[in-house]
View (tube, one colour):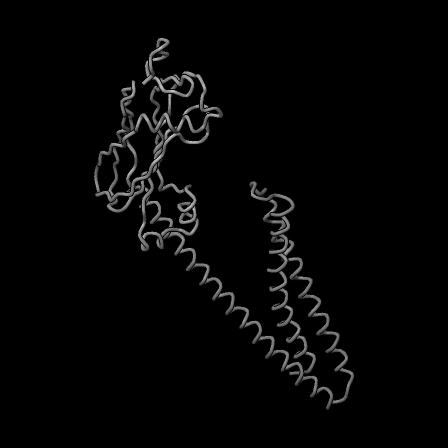
Length: 296
C-alpha cells in the first residue's frame, strides 16, 4: 500500500475516533448549558434535543474533516520525496493506524463497560423502587383515630387502630397542639413491635400535663384567661427498619426516612374540645369561683 493510502487510512481512523469523542463531549456540554442557563427542570421543547444532537454531529464532523485534511496534506508531501523517506512515512502511517485502532478499541470497550455499569445500576434502582413500593403497601397505617376527652379535670385518651401486613418494629410519636402556639403542649413516643393484621392502641392524655404545657408557653404565669377551643392530637407512625430492609430501599428513600419525609411514614390528626380557666395562674375547670373560696 502506498504512503498516501496509509496516511489517508490513518487520518480516517483518527478522524473517526476523535470525531465521535468530540461529538459526545459537545453534546454533553450543550445539554449542560441548556439545563443550567435555558430550561432547567422545566419540560424541554422538542427542538432542544435535536439541536443538541445536531451540535454534537457538527463538531464531530469538523474534527473528522480536520484529521482527513491533515492526513492528505502530509501524504502529498511524502509523494514528492525519495523512496527512503516514503518508506519512513509508510512506517509512521502504519504506527498511527495501529495506535488509532488501539485507541478506538479502548474507547469502544470503555463505552461498553460504562453501558453495562449504567444498566446494572438501573436494574438495582428498579429493584429498590419495586421493594419500596411493596413495603409502602405492607407497613402499618393509622386507619382510625379518635380522642376521648371527658373534660372537667379528667384525663383523656387517644384511641388508634393500626392496620398492615408487615411484622416488625414501629415508632409512634404523638403530640397535642392548640391553635395559638406552634410548640406542642404535650408529646410522647412509643416503640413497639406489631404483627401482621390490625392492632388497637390507646395513648393516655394527662389533663394536668396538658394544662402545664399550656402554662409553659405563656408570657405571664399569673395570667387570667379562658381557654375554650379545639386542640389537635397529631400522631406519626414510622416503621423501624432492620439493616436488610434499609439496605434494600432506594438511597433517596432511606434519606427521606431519616428526615421524616418518607412515604413509609403515616400521619393522622384528630381535634377535641378543651375548656379550662387560669385565674391568676391558678387552674379551674368550672370557671371563676366566688370570692373567698379556693380554686381547685
